[in-house]
Image 1 (cartoon, one colour):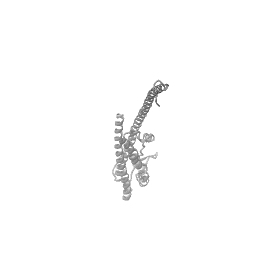
Image 2 (cartoon, rainbow, N blue to C red):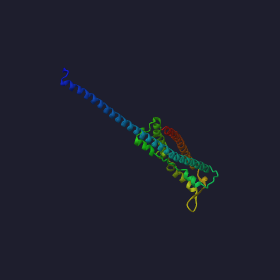
Image 3 (cartoon, rainbow, N blue to C red):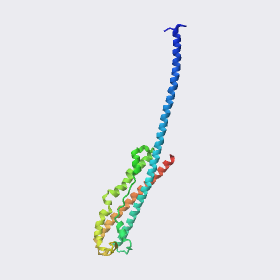
Length: 249
């Protein structure tokens, strides 16, 4: 449309231009304000989520570290017990060989000769990590190390103590050894074992049978002690790496 100077159309055109200019400026300012507010809200939300995530990671890592100390204490008690059982093995070997031994603690040694030591693994912190998402631990190598310890190394000693039939000392060997030795046992008036005498009454075949059982129990205990040492070493490495991670955060 061609506008004629002085006609009312030109005034309308000028008013529309001014209105559009003011409108877009106002709209632009409002849009910018909204954009800044939304962006800030997202940034604040992300910061808050990261803060919560970091707090959760530190909390779970601290719990795992404390669990490792409890597990190490339990494992060391089992190591101590297995070593005492090996000492009992040596005493009964000496007894079978006709050596003179001090029998003041013979009842204790006869008991721990067959004792099995069950590991009690504290998995609560690891289960909490899995429930919250394993990737809560952002350090990939540390996360893999944690999974490896709980799902692989711990399962080694648990399977040995709970599941592998040949590792059951009491179940496999007590009945037969006790059958061979009980005629040589002396008890006090309270029914407590005081002495084992007259071992020479056993024939060579019976002695060999007992020695074969002692040999098997000893080898099994040494094998388990090697596994405990391996696992404790892995636990110590994980504990040190968790300490480093906690210090970084």
